[in-house]
Length: 244
View 1 (tube, rainbow, N blue to C red):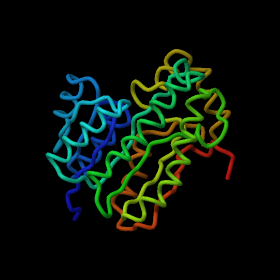
View 2: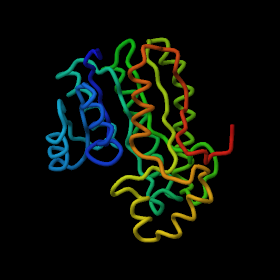
View 3: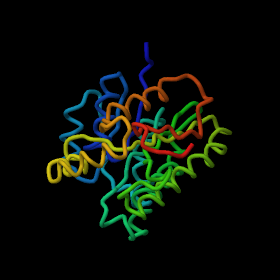
View 4: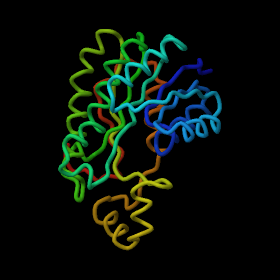
């Protein structure tokens, strides 16, 4: 029987983060969600079992520190931290490197550093990254790709430091994930034939991934008693990437 654990998921009032929160709450976890829209956050928290929420823009370091203090005051420690905040909008992330790194690198790194105050031995950190940080992906924003590459490298390097205090950190590296309201959902509605051709050309399995695929890997990491899985980048891409 799973001993109830507390998990904090950043940027989780909608999208992949919300899906993870829902799955974890159904699995018996105490879930803490986060977002920047209070009404949306309250509505999302109310729809989940055993869920709490904290408002805060996690691209802002002072907000991160404030949020961590609030969590520590109420819960003392968490068992799992999932860094889910990211932004893949092409116009904002192609050559606006400040924006790309703010949302896709610094938001995770600053949260991880600040969260040392609420993590303890055997706690687990998972960062939701992207295959765009692994190799050149056709059509991917340049800044986004570089920021995710930096995040992937950070996970590998910081795992050595975290291991000394008994904390593991790993990255889940998805490819094309489809869910309602996602960028791929919009592309399918606006340009169905072009989008389907792209997937057929680039993804050997010829289909999209889903948030369930991401949850499956996250759950494997969080429910394992092993501390031996750390510094790893686990790809979920339907065979799209070519590098080893």
